[in-house]
Figure 1 (tube, rainbow, N blue to C red):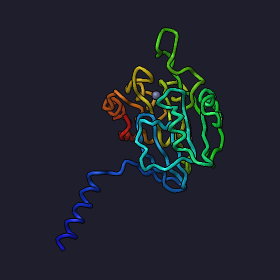
Figure 2 (cartoon, helix red, strand yellow; figure 1 turned 120 degrees about the vertical axis):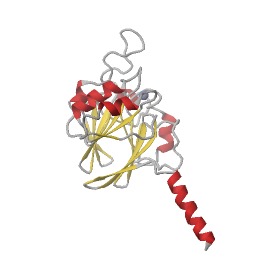
Figure 3 (spheres, rainbow, N blue to C red; figure 1 turned 135 degrees about the vertical axis):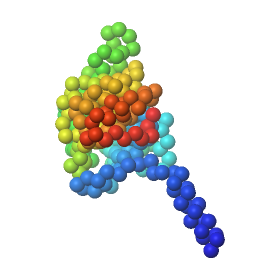
Figure 4 (cartoon, rainbow, N blue to C red; figure 1 turned 45 degrees about the vertical axis):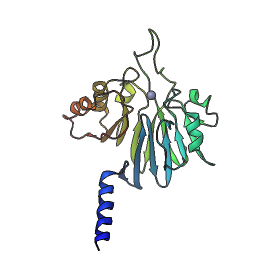
Length: 239
Ligand SMILES: [Zn+2]
């Protein structure tokens, strides 16, 4: 009897110590599961399909399933990691990427900014991501307009936006009816949390996850959105 009680207590405490790293969100067609992996990398699961976004080998992929669909946003190493793409691929995996990435990942279905396509049975739109002023040297930008893709997915009626590495651009401000947004914030490459909050106030997603936020003060972001209780900020374990 004692042993059983002790075992149950251990199970309960280990459950408490190790909370599930994923979020589940109900859609019109079942649950959308969101798993943060690291930095700009995440995994979505929906209707039995596994979507890996910007899979990067610095993340811990132990135990995560292989991909039905891989979305890649840009050419930088924290987004385009061919070795990790290989590990997550199986026969039938489809990859969507901008042209600049398809030079390396040659089997990718190319989407340009503004293009829409159904791939792996899922509705995907490529949207712009770029800097207007931040760059490695005068006259250069970290992310040139048109090179990379943010993505807009429609999953069970929920519109899910993945920003990719971007500043607060007019195209982001103009997004409409976004249910779930993953928004980058880190300097010098993308934008500071106050700029990200300004953009989020403009397009008003119902739920926003800061991601790709290394070195950013997320309290600044959260505080800036306190005046907008209609936008739920969810802080999860990216970096
Ligand atoms: Zn990045």
